Length: 167
Length: 328
Image (cartoon, rainbow over all chains, first blue to last red; front, side, top):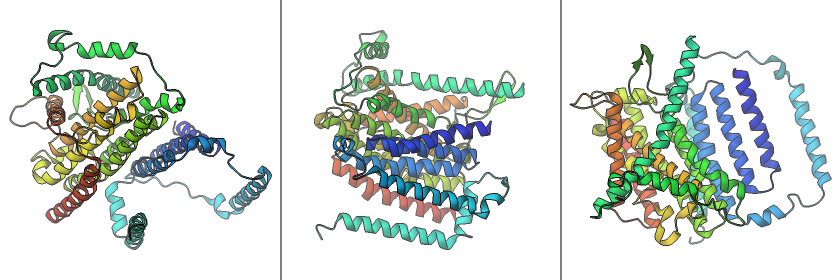
C-alpha cells in the first residue's frame, strides 16, 4: 500500500520535474515545479513527518513559488516562448550534461555509503512539534540562531536594495 | 470487517462534507443579498419563491446555461483549470476541521472529523495559502489588463496578510500547548481564548477579512476601478466556481475564528448538541462578514499595505510577547 503510494507520488514528482525543464512557457514550468513540490510534501507524509509536509506546503508552495510566478508574470512571456532556450549549439550543452551526469553517477556508485544504508528506525512519536522545538532550542541552539541572523541580514539587504535609488 | 466499516465511515464522512460544502454557498448568496437589501432599506430578492428563497437556484440555472467564454489569446489550459485550482484548497482545509466530540451512530463510535493530525493548525494555514494559485492563474491566463492587475493586487494582499494571520495564531498555540485543533478546542472548555487573546483575535479577524477579500479589503475586485478583478473574463460555470470558492474561504475563516478563539463546539448556558452550537457560532461570524461588507467603505491600496505591514504585523508580535510573559 505504502509502496504503491510512494511510486505514484515519486513518478508524478519526476514527471513534473522534467516538465519544469522541458516546457517552453515559463509560467507552465513554474506550475509543474509547484506540482513537484506538492508531491514532495506527500512523500514527507509517507515518511511520517506531517510537520515537515505542512512546512513544505507553507514555505515552498505557498510563499516561494508564488513569488516566482509573481515575477514571471511581469515578463514578456510571448517573446520568451519564441526565443530559443540556449543560444549557440545544442551539442556543447549535450556534452556538458553527459560529463556532469556521469560524474555524479560515478560518485554515487563509488560511495561506500550506498551499500550501508542503516535500516530505518521507527520513531515512537512521529515527530511532534514540541519535540522539534525542544531540539531546536537546546541541542541545535547555535545553528538555529545563526540561521535566524542570516535571514535577518537577507531581509535588511532586500529592503536596502529596494531603496537604493532615493538614498 | 472492522477495516471495511472504518473505510465506509470515512467514505460517508468525505461525501457528507463535500456535499455540504457545495451546498452551503447557495443559501449564503441569498443571505448576503437579503442582508444587503435590509441594510440599505430595501427588500432584496423577492420574486422567486417565498421572500426570494429560490433566487440562488435561478441564479445557478442562469450561470449553468451561459456560454463558457474563453478570450482569444488567452492561455487556454491555465484559463480552464484556474477555477478548479481555486476550488480545491477550501475543500482540503475541511479535512482537518473537527466539528464536535465523538458521537456514536448505530452503536459505532466515530469522531466528527476526517483526520486529526497533530499539526492540524499548520496544515490549515498552509493549505489555505494555496488559494492564491487560482487567483494568479485566473488573472494571468485571461490576458486582460484588468484581470492581471486584479490578480497582482490579490497576490500582494494575500501574501502580506498571511503573515499577521500566522503570527496571531501563535498565541493560541502557546496557551493550548498544541497544534491539534481538537486539543485547542478542549483547552477552551473552562474559558474561551477570546478572553486571554483579544489582541490575537483582533489581528486574526482583520487578516481574515483580507484573506477572504471581503470589504473593507476587497481591493482585488474593486468594481469601480478594475472591472471585477481576476475573474473579469470568466463567465458561466467557471465564474460560479470562483464564487463558490470565495464563499468557502469566508466559511473557513469563520470556522477558524470559532475553533481558535470562541470555544469551538462548547456551548454556553443552553445545552444544545455540539455541531449545532458550532454551526450557530460560525453563522454569527458569516453574518458579521456580510454586515461589514455593507457598512464600511473600501480602503485604498497603499492603506491596505500599510495596515498589513505597519500595524497588524507589529501588533501580532506584541501579542506573542504578552502571551509569553503571561504563560511563563
